[in-house]
Each structure stands twice: as structure tokens, then as C-alpha cells.
Image 1 (cartoon, one colour):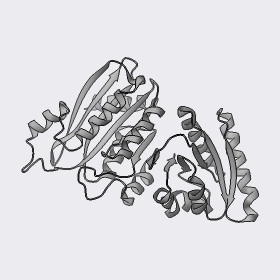
Image 2 (cartoon, rainbow, N blue to C red):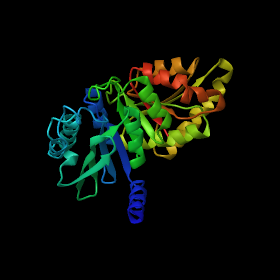
Image 3 (cartoon, rainbow, N blue to C red):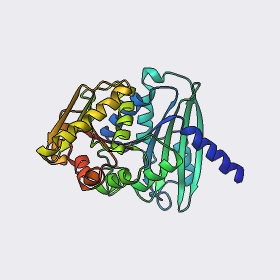
Image 4 (cartoon, rainbow, N blue to C red):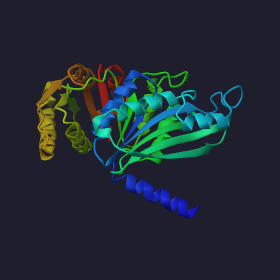
Length: 323
């Protein structure tokens, strides 16, 4: 048992050296658009993509449902009877159809028993000769958010991608139930992308407040932009006219950080007004709104409280919360 723990710790540390993206698949078109984005950002041999479907404990598999043996056989052969399997299989086919995925893949199957559920957790990992992996994970959890956050603990991951809507196997709550999205964003140690109307080509709008954590966010956002060769703009919001100079300094500092990374912003600007309203308005012209997870004392509520979730809920396009 001790040796097993050591092996898991070594595996966890080794994974930290890779760029790993967790894509939450629910069968919605938005989740597959998020998967396409994951394929672009995790586009080299040092990257891994994990497709996750979360199902409730004992989803009709104990009484009146499939027998355990038959259920597992169907899962391992990627039959379509089990909840979530057809969604994961569709995601795998989508990835494998890409030219940059053309390769020979070895297959590894793993099962983990879960108390109270006959099917448990199951995954199939595909590894190519370069060491790149694609993992399809059928995970059991009491709630969707708990399953996603528990999966991070098995990671780690650099980015979690959530689609805006979907059925999640008949769960009463969709993925975009605000409580689910908020919990994942609040508790995830890594960046989270909430995909909505995900149309590439309009660039990223990076919002900064000049804090140390915001500059850290700028670096990470710049690295993402470089990975997918996306245009990037920078903005800051001044609460009043008297604060415009400070907002401009915040923009200038962010631009300087980006240039050090080799990223040249296409636009840098400030606005005056309510941060939520101004960012929502400006974000209409971009594929993504990018914000940090913390900010200065006066704006902390914007980045982590009710205003940030209003941005996620009301923005017409996708939102990335960067850590």
C-alpha cells in the first residue's frame, strides 16, 4: 500500500510537467465546441486531454437496471447503453478525426470500485508513441460539481472546460446550473473556461486591475493566447473619471508583461463605469472574456463574488477565469 501511494505521488508530480486539459462532456454541442478548443490548446506531445462524464451514484444499475457484469462489458467495448458512454465516444471520434491526432494509440483500461455503486469509476486511456494521452473517464459522484472537483484531485490540470448547457444523463440540474458553475469556479485550483456560443476568431479580451495577482493572470492568459495563436486585447475599468489614470497604468503594465512573453496586444483601452456592465459590453466583440480569480481589495468582489458570476451568466460569449 505504501509503495502504491509513492507511485501515485510520483505520477502526480510527473503530470505537473505536462499541459493537461479536463473537458466536461455532457452531450451538448457546446461541450464539443469546448473539446475542439481543448484540442487546439493541448496541441503538442507534452499535453493531455481528459474527457469527463459525471453520473450519479447507482443510476438505475442496482435495481431494474443493467447487471453489473453486462454494464462493465458494454463500457469497456464502448457500447452505447450506459449513461454518458455515447457522449464520451463521440468526443473521442471528434479528436481522432483531427490530422494532428493521426497516430497509433495504445489502450489501457482502469476500474475503481465506488461504495454504493455497482459500476464505479471507469476510464480508458489512449497513449501514443510521443507519450501524449487522451483519457475518457466515466466518473461516479453525488453531484456534478463534486465529480468535477474530485477529478481535479486525481489530475492535476491546467484548465477545466465547462459547456454552458446539457442534460448530464437526466440529472435534475444541468451543468449550467449557477450553483454548479460557481462551485467549480470558486474551488478549482486551476483556470476554468465556461464555454458559451464558442466561436473562434474574435480574440480574447483580458481584463486587469493592476494587482499582483492580475499580472500573474496576464502571464497565464498570454501563454494561452500563444498556444492557440489568438489575438488578445487588454482593458481596465475605472470606477470614475478621477481613476482613469490609474486604469491606464494598469493597462500599460499588462501590455508590458504580454510583450515580455512575445505577445503583442491588438488593442489596449480603458472604460469608466460599473466593472460588470463595462466588461459585458466590451466582451460582445470577443470570443472570450478573460478575468483573474482575485483582485485588489476594492475589486475583489468583482473577481470572486457576485459580479464575476454575473459576467459568467450574462456574457454573450465564453468566459475564462484564470488562476
